[in-house]
Length: 115
Image (cartoon, rainbow, N blue to C red; front, side, top):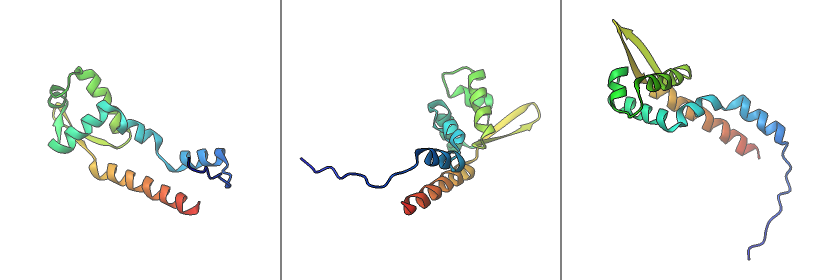
């Protein structure tokens, strides 16, 4: 049986929670981690700009559900949209997504190095 090493450093849980709220865009990660929305991002990242009709054709959900997911992703900058005539085209903001992950990683590294 392995010896259990007691943790001697005490952390202020409230301060840690506050740090996470201040430095991690939890809403963004909630948006991109949903299974349906992450599948939408994969589709758009791999196919490029598409209309809502083209996107909806690739999924079992109806068009209104897909549209709500895309609006939610757009709100957090994971996708962008532009109107061309009567069509709305969506595309994945891959650079913004990668930048958000890198920013969060750098924040977490800074905290870990302080421990």
